[in-house]
Image (cartoon, rainbow, N blue to C red; front, side):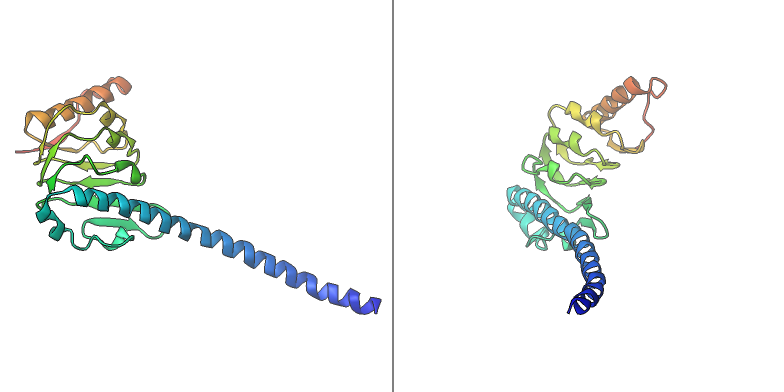
Length: 198
């Protein structure tokens, strides 16, 4: 009997190790999917809240914005290969009308590109924009934005130096604000090359 127990334990021990490895592998690969789903739901909720605050005619323009997975929505681009989630919002020239007040920008920590050019957005740029630390492209030109330029825009250190600007005083002031902040950190860089559209 003791010999049988010894042989069984020798046979069961490798099986236990294989099952343990499988369990560890499965749990580590399943965790990012749960994170992606959860992150997608947070991003979707932020976008849907903002959509609800926009003018009535905009609701039909964004009719694909339903559910809790924004990756198939018009103007929303996701990185489905990692846990990055929404990396690009491209809503340029869609005829959007409203403010950015209800857009919870902090829900998009992996956002690389934000294009809302050529719409009818009004009001001010939210100060939360400085929290988009990964942002490399920003275009809010050709809207009716006004108000104080948030100083937090200077926290966008990953923006490419070809910032799109509009030839209005408001967008020229944004460009000057970015130049001032860059010159504090890099005294030799006192201008930002830009393509001025006008």
